[in-house]
Length: 218
Image (cartoon, rainbow, N blue to C red; front, top):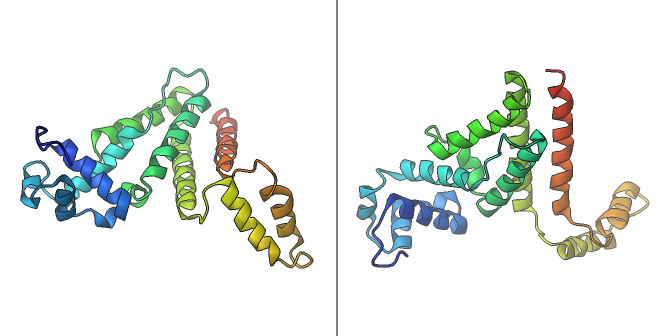
């Protein structure tokens, strides 16, 4: 709740909507709940946002504003895109409810537009053709969003939890019937230091390497 001396504003309304969504998902965003979050009457929100759709558009723009913009000044375009991908993953992991919302909105804000322009700028300045830049953006965003969604739905988050789950599966696994799965659990998932989160960087590097090979052909 904003302090009494802080007047209500569009920014405060959107921040409150994000907090509501972080707790209950995007379906929890209603004018009434956002107003409750701020400790005000729902009617007072209409002085700053015309309707719920405006709130949804606004929170998407705020999510994009939190993602680090890639810089065209990087010597290697892959470093710029890698930094942007890591930032996007971190931000979207905090607000995974935004994944479905992002693609459903038809009125992108300036932060969203600026973000897309910056990504395209890095690719175009690196020598990607317009078509290849479009392919690259689609591939990268699909990978980032898919990975975040997968992480959000995993029943485990730490290496210790991975070990517990993998060990529990192994206890009931018929090794003779499923030798490759057994090998994966014993010789990979249960190895000291294994961290599923590291798979993001490995997959991202594969994509960037493949795009680099296509860049030189475009």
